[in-house]
Image (tube, rainbow, N blue to C red; front, top):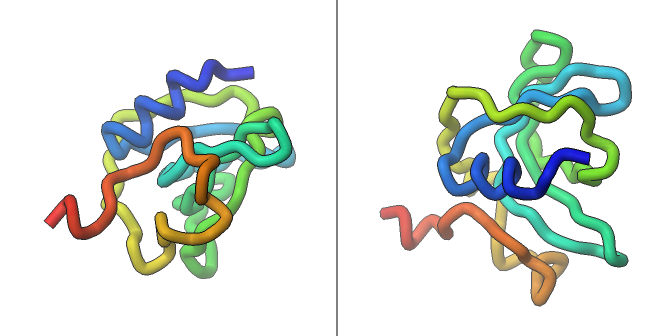
Length: 106
């Protein structure tokens, strides 16, 4: 499994990750790293799937154990606060690291 430091770095620098997930190569914009049932997850916006943009941008949940061949790429993303809400109840008390809330970035 990829060390969590790669995910911390991607979130801190707002840089995209490339990974293989369900046998597809995906480019992700990770917004938050958190735990659930003693497993680590990221919620990220999928920017590309197998080299093509998705039909619609949405926030997806990815189990770290299911992400393979993860690499940080030199491509920045803008936080998608319309898709991601750090105050969502599912993150309460389990957040390890997240992008800055919208009010702090302004």
